[in-house]
Amino acid sequence: MPYSVQAIQPKDGEIFVKFMESVSFSHAPHWSECYCRFYHCEDAEIWKQRTAKENRAEALGAIKDGSMRGYLAYDSDKIIGWCNANNLEAYHLLKPELSPIIKDQKTGVVICFLIHNEYQSQGVARMLLDAAILGFRNEGYDAVIAMPVDVDVPEKRYRGTLNMYQERGFIPEEHDDISLMRLALH
Image 1 (cartoon, rainbow, N blue to C red):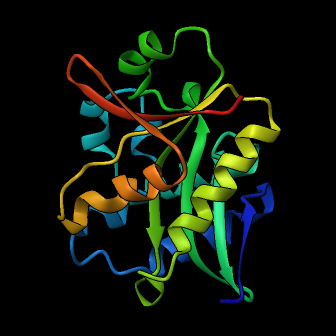
Image 2: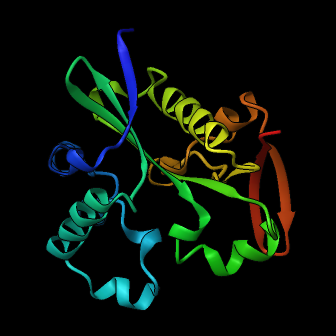
């Protein structure tokens, strides 16, 4: 498997949006308009009013200014996968629920995976997760959290699989109505 993974760079905006536009969202057509911006939005009601054009433009701007972070998987020079991985502070929709749980720890979040249809079930998501963990570790984060949904429904697997996180040492935690997995980085 000659795949490689790299952190998204400010210059990668156009290739990122072209990748998003090349993936089939037949299992969840409304996701084709997201451009991985949902969790970055400040209000779910405002999100419902947003257009694909607005999300695309916002993704381009956020990639350019470095506020949208994550990892791209490549097969040679073709993007085959994406992992949205960033500091919890970047995910405005998650912050209210997760901030009390993480307290004062510097915590990274892995929230979305998108793998090109032709490359699914080939370990690409695991490669992306490994890169995110290493990136957070190298940046001095205390922990990484994820919120996989443990059901066999394709449209719910965008958060990664429970097994994928368990294989890397993530520990399940229950907090009131929130289920998450945490990996301590030191």
